[in-house]
Length: 478
Image (tube, rainbow, N blue to C red; front, side, top):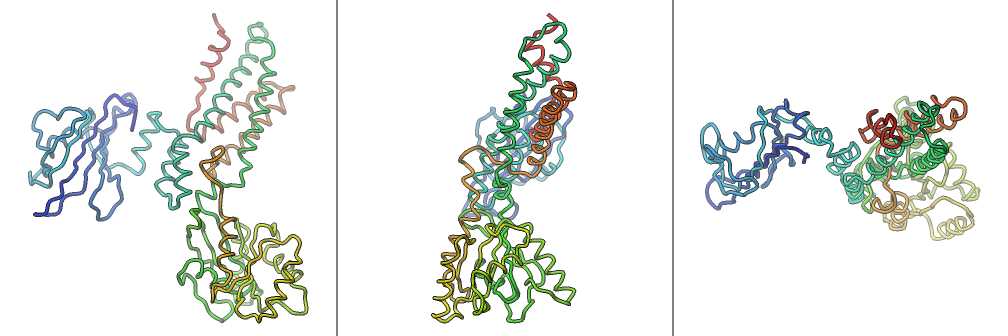
């Protein structure tokens, strides 16, 4: 909804009857005009606001000129509109044939624009942003809420849509504007002794504090981004270790082909899961081995690329293939290095699969060897065939994919563009500190760049605001 001079809702709520044709879906027409200076020439737009497909209730929203004429022609109101914000029971008719379509409630809020066309994607929200009712972070939160598939995603999107993240960035922006105004005023008017002493010292302290705040905000292990797009979990290992079987077990469906023939999986198989309310993108990959087959070599290349990009890697090992003449811990350490050549082993879970193939004696030896591993990554012994050990493995996986409670602590970064702009903001603040004593004009440009970076996140920044602060704080030109 917009802060506007004229605002119109036209709502039709169908009554369900036991006889005759099935009732129409609910029709909700909204006419928003927003700031009349900005939107005076806007056309009327309309769109289905609820999901597509067959359903008992639907919402159609209208913004712009022809809501009143639509109300009159479809609700049988010849001359005068109904009282504003009052529900009336009316017959809903086809405006051309006058055929009665349904009976429903009509609600109207006056509006005054003309012309109608289908709304473009996101146009209602764009108008809300243009009218100053939503910042870009709130708009992004609304989009994330629409596409949320898990409870944690919904909670994070609601928090962002409520403005928590936007208020944090707006606070930084306001403080940057004030301190930039102080620096600009010092450059222009300090020689006239119109600026009080200690202004630049206060700016120095602020810049140092803000840089620390932004850097701390960036050091969040990408929790918000991972929660928004899904934690990327990659299943990797040698051929025939049971990677595809593990994928199918986790998905509870035959998502990947399982075969005793080595090298069956040659491409990446992705599937989306909800694990303990957190979104997970699970990827099965080709077995890691040297091959003369060009197709399999490409599959191996893609597998290694996914491992490099993974948030969590499940290193699957065939229990029965662990050599008896080599210490188990030594073998696993070497194997992990072949799968994760450039990553921290703590980012992986070692899954010792095919436990059902081991004799009791081999199992006891395996448990004894693993107990001597002083600082291992998580190690789970499972059987995808019998599902033995699966619950313990799932509990370990849940711990790895949880991104924290999105409602606790400070708001998290949720977009890659936020991170990019904030990284540039930190660099700009460093520019201020670098040139502070040698060239104050270049130092001020660093603060201006930092303000621009934050403003690009929220969508609101302008030079006139800096002038306002200069005259408010210093009363220059009296």
